[in-house]
Amino acid sequence: MKTLYALTTISCLAAAPMAMADDFALAYFMGPNHPMNGAVFTPFAEKLAEVSDGALTVTQFPGGALNSSPTQQYSILRDGVTDIAFHPPGYTAQLFPVTTSVTTPGICEDAVECTEALWRAYDVIEQEFDAQILALWTTDPSVIFTADKPVRVLEDMSGMIVRVSSAQDVPFMEALGASGASQPVSVINQNLANGVIDGIAIDTSANMSFKLDEPANYITTNVPGSVTSFALLMNQGVYDALSDQEKAWVNEASGKWLSMQGAQVYHDLAIRGLEVAAGNGVEVITLGDDERARWDAAIQPVLDTWYVSEVGQGMTGEDVMRLMKGE
Image (tube, rainbow, N blue to C red; front, side):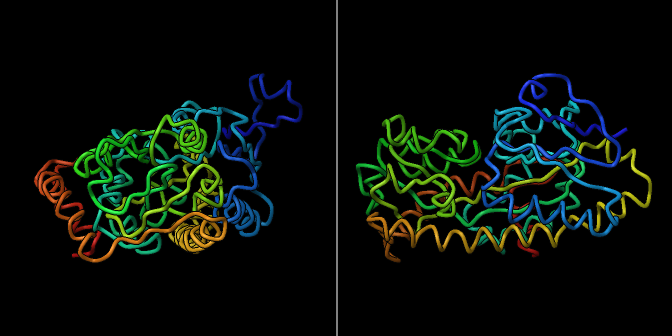
């Protein structure tokens, strides 16, 4: 039985939702104007309605209407609070060690290439999820936003507290001389403004959604940055209960094409986000080749350790890297 929620008033949002046949609840913690909606959520809903001739539809619950905690989205999906949920795997990285391996510096160069890398490893990745994967994509690699201290050379990172997207990114940040702090994206603007953190490691598309050029005065690019992976998921029980025809419709409306569309949008937004930040007076610092080589050398011991470590499903880091690179 599908578990879609027809909630029409604020008071209803606090109550237990009632199921409606043929309509799916899609929950996410960002607002409805977030680029993710236009890139992935709405295209999925529109395609599903099209291929099913209106037999299957989607109702969105944005802004945390069903649960506002970014880290709890996978839990509310598995618990049946929603039929479909958006979840960044890095927020629960311990559950998705292969998926979040795409964040490792050097595996891929931009959102499109990194999303291709995820899909090369799809058969392994899907084993990590107790859910049906509708889309799986990434951002461009991260840059470093700072408020008061420009980062021009490796030594400038010493002693800084830098927000990272995933716990897997922390050792790399520590190798650069900083402390990595994993925090939900919803709090990073305020935390940088208030001095809770000294910097933010994130791709420049985030500037379009979270106005990071307001607290930030500097952006350092050409660093060995990590990407952020994203997943749009359907409750496995809901999917399994569909008829063969309904599953075929859901499959047609989702998958790699939807993921690649999301990746392209995020790549384009990263370019635009940097342009907007520069236009708003943020100084853009680009590491030269020699300085970038120093940063790469600093993180190499962490990479070497990861290569030989067991990531999951009997695979080492090097195994995962080769799979994602198509080697």
